[in-house]
Image (cartoon, rainbow, N blue to C red; front, top):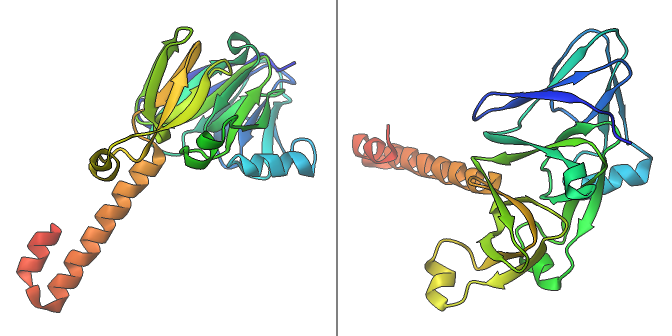
Length: 252
């Protein structure tokens, strides 16, 4: 059984979650996510259940080790965790999802002690070959609070039985285990090559809740990389003889 924890989320675009612990309560977190902790809180870094557990987390995009923060003091103790890039922290009560939720790789931020991070394989070959997350997703299991992170703004959708939603494969953050997940080809030569949305879409069929993100980290990284390449080319043109004109093109 997972520990019963209280929490508070601070911030807007770069959020943090502060966990309040009673004596002997604990919270598990991805290595490197901790922002601060008060006196009386003890860190315990381990594989969280043996070498096999550590390797399973690595497969899902997390680190081999996981850190548990246990409060050994009296009264209340607090520990805070920070989001790794601009976006939102989503609090998830796993009890409301029947004890588990499926989420994208590396989405896990922290959870009450007792929550397990497991591997979830996509059920269909097409989803595994062409989905933005590949064959392997994360499955968080337990009966307490878990916190996942996503980029940009978060959109919640409650799909009715049989209701279908098509989304960009990278924009899917998490879904209830009752949601059916598959991949569909966009269709049309011009749509596939020039539509700018990729060749495949994720097809979600209800019933169940779905969390979507407006800014997947891969999309953010692509924009930064493209801007850096443009800047570098502009500087090279300036050095190569274009002078002031080259700098104007590059934005300097």
